[in-house]
Length: 481
Image 1 (tube, rainbow, N blue to C red):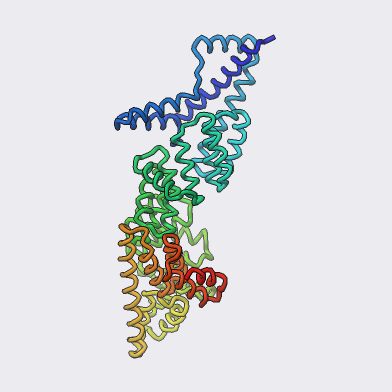
Image 2 (spheres, rainbow, N blue to C red):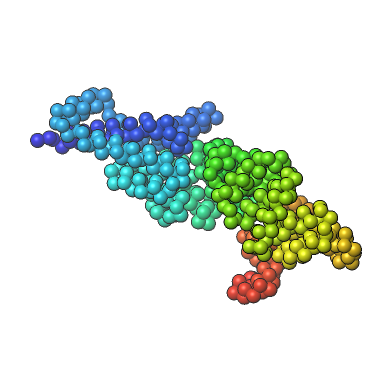
């Protein structure tokens, strides 16, 4: 018979073998929160003079790792060899270690469903591993299972995982849930500025929230931190491109999209945005042409792809190629304002304003505040001698241009006043005045997040939804006026 102590020793040896191999392999993987990264973080704290904090972190990292002495290992291995019972134990431990490494890789690749399944299997083998519970919490958060994530974080703390890592993950949950969000946000920003080992996970949460709330300067800073700490994240580079484009930094946006496309060459959305921006920024169209040819083959019925492909051909001096594509697009999609605009441009440049005008009128009916369409209509009416209507269009075009300039100034002012509800109200008012309804509502609602009782924002939203006949939404804002 095997004594209890011997059996425990065998089990400990098998578990230690599995976990030792797991950790050795994990040091070579890209997981930012591996123990190797934490040891680097500890060294950084020590070099910065934070010796007490470094000592505390070292103790927390080392605490769970109850290593066997050399003598115990030898005895355990001898017992395993003699008794022939260790094989299945070691195999089980190694299998758990392999699944754990696969789960960490899956999390890094945002294959969350697979990661959660693997971690559930690992926890059946290692239910007392604080590290596994920590990664299970992260996977649950990424899938939106916040309550499950909180439970795993509690277990991660109970079983001795690094408290600083747990604090960050818990703060991310609080921020996403709106629980003590300002306190959580301040802590996360502090960690980001200190180049915390989990910086790219922090930036991945903060950046889209800032972007959605038009906090563009903060969104840009967070996105740059994101790609600094996770340079292979196509998602991070693509969002940085979106932010730079909205900030009217088109050439910088193109560079970000180029990097994103290089990392994810089969992502059609990234490739389309790259090609579209190259054309909008009036850069060399050859690169855009290559991308658009590929996208046309993959998405022959996509109206946006067809329109930008045609715009690229016009820039390249091949209007003859653009005309049939635009005509077919307009026939299939009679409300495709941009396709009508580009087709009218060809007629205008060919000295045929009488053919361009009906197209521009139809485009104007769809997007009555588009500055390019307004200016083209003004040119067209002038060429046709319709000076009175041209004068009215010119006034409207100049107002639109002035509004766009003012909106740019307001967004720049928000760099120093990110929580000023009055600036957000002004931006929303400009967007609604120019027919940009979604952007206008987003701006006004972001003003209300900073000041829920902002009277002008509530009234403007009440008026807007009343005009649209959405009385339930209108009454919601009416009660706050």
